[in-house]
Length: 362
Image 1 (cartoon, rainbow, N blue to C red):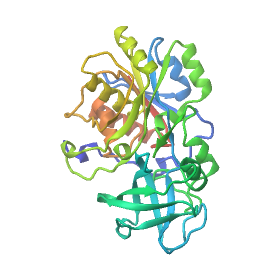
Image 2 (image 1 turned 90 degrees about the vertical axis):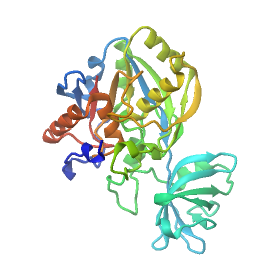
Image 3 (image 1 turned 45 degrees about the vertical axis):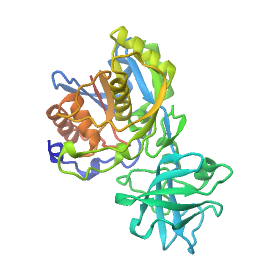
Image 4 (image 1 turned 30 degrees about the horizontal axis):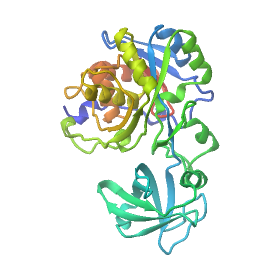
């Protein structure tokens, strides 16, 4: 199929620039993937729209303050703000070798940052050497050892908001972003972007789900380039995703196996959970699930890999036109049904993308 087959027109004013005033107050469209029927709801109705016995799987990855500003050797910058000139923007996307503190990163402007160069960050103790250069601004960085690398990131880094969320360059994050661009169940630090379907949940809604007999389990997939990289080819069969690391805990493996045996629905919260569960199912080859860690580059799209072995329901936000995430949703529910539902969402003025509203597809 053509990537352009997944295009839709979206007015810019429907791209949510802020989270809803109250977490959990988003709108939610339901879509029946067998009939294509859709309806308008509120996210607070979720516990009543699921069935007692459903297994709801969450991604508990926590977003790193992975957006940093540096200068090339010989230039200076001030703490917590971009340099007025000669600045380099660095987005850490995945840790590669913990013993050497090596990271994959995207840098801008990429052409000026070449292997062998040293980058100086806002904390004078933090520097990195560029080891390797890849396509589209990808670089491999090795940071000098510091007492607590993650503590340093917390002090000088910014949460990596998507480019369609506009903030003042002098303040890439607000205090609101620091709180609301994390899920309430975020636990394991490592993502370069939020698993946004989880942003709608509150402790109260999670408690209501449990009270309705819905089982809740967690896994971890650290969001990186595999989730948010732009598509640069014309045909879907030419798309290749970067691998992203995941961990399946023993309790979740057992919950999935039990739900399968009892023929209960498994509802994935987000495309990251969907890709992880479907990758694990393919790797297991029908054998019982077991706790493990690994990585996935699974790409799900209509006409390619569109057989869903574990996931029978999906809670997801509205995704960018021609994105791999929209292709995944279309593989699950059918391209025409999804694009028809999206057209209704535009007409009904749903809020789109990371801070926007959501869909429940069953």
